[in-house]
Image 1 (cartoon, helix red, strand yellow):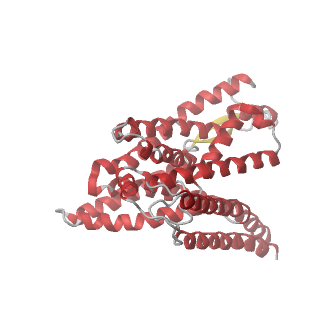
Image 2 (tube, helix red, strand yellow; image 1 turned 60 degrees about the horizontal axis):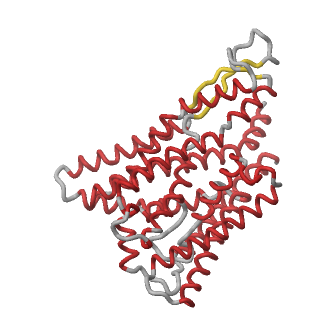
Image 3 (tube, one colour; image 1 turned 180 degrees about the vertical axis):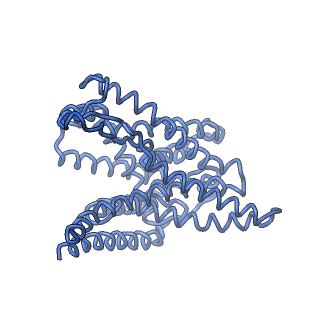
Length: 396
């Protein structure tokens, strides 16, 4: 009876997540009142990677709906909060859990209003105070509803905000693939090119899924075990920071693009080279930031010492902390470079490939799908552990 109860917990969580997805999809088809895609806004969408960034960060900017901003403000605030906690600036790390939640919600509200104002002013060049305030209020309310979906899905469902981003990716990748196939039909050796395209996608998927689960086997000695026992392997992931880099990086990269209408047409912010360099540097730094957030050397060194685990030839305490920091910088460097190349080429390869821009976008979307699905699968497997344990105990 207990195993069926544990299984029903997982089923209910999956059903709740599907319900959230259904409500979100319905909301994306409710049009934003008084809004229409102007020539200036359409020019920004086609001349930049704004729509792709929005999709990857939980926003839907190509279809003007009440949920257009999505969870984009939440992603940025999450980065700000983690940065404040990590650097211990303003004493945020000393706040209680309840106080941190209030601060986070306040920052989400402020940033949502700011993004709604920027979005409204970049979309509609003519000013009408009553109409603009109405659009800003609707966008703010819609985004806060989606953020609430994320919170309750984290508590009662599976994946937090990942299902919302997955829906956006799937909604964009299918039309992109269809358009890409139509464009390739005009070329010679169409079927060979199509075969190579799908081979490339599946190759990337296979590589990234394998890379996500690749780890560095750090050997440690546990002094509480008998001396004749072998060294314990402590796994350190090589690609820990990739998923959060994609999600939060896209949210941050949207800000300069949304500011484009407020700069002259030939300003540096409009230059593809500046955008590409800015994307590459930001991605590289974010990857390491989230890697050190998930595996803080100081905390891990303290846990090693408290758990009687010691790295051979390394003294406990500060030397272990410095050793782990140096090790992380080295072993995660390939992941940082690969993520930077993948994200930069995926976003700005569209400007270089013209009508074949899908060749740059599709692989990036495929990698995102692989990472999110893998993350949600791991969460489901964790939730299924009590059920599998009960089944195992019955078989003994």
